[in-house]
Length: 96
Picture 1 (cartoon, one colour):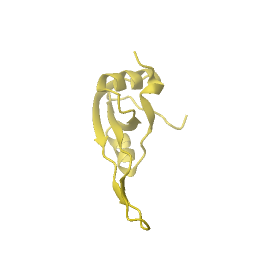
Picture 2 (cartoon, helix red, strand yellow):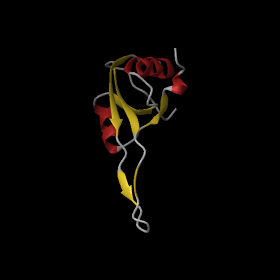
Picture 3 (tube, rainbow, N blue to C red):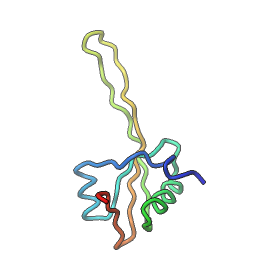
Picture 4 (cartoon, rainbow, N blue to C red):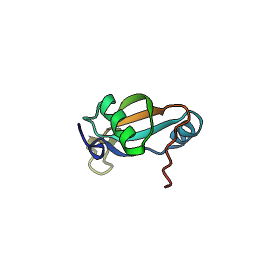
């Protein structure tokens, strides 16, 4: 089995993810591109000692950009995002 630090990159904190975590028990993480739903579930359960009910995965595409001086276009780097729904009553405390 893959180690949790090879799956989870960081916590993805936005206004929307804060509302989801407080109201629906859903937490958003940035994960490595090779991570699968099963490995994400195992890593979250092992790291935070909670029970995961569901895992949704989104491949976020990088945004196109253009250099003002040269006019060359490039693509920003994309990332993989996992929205993890916990069992009713479970919560993750990031402040500790």
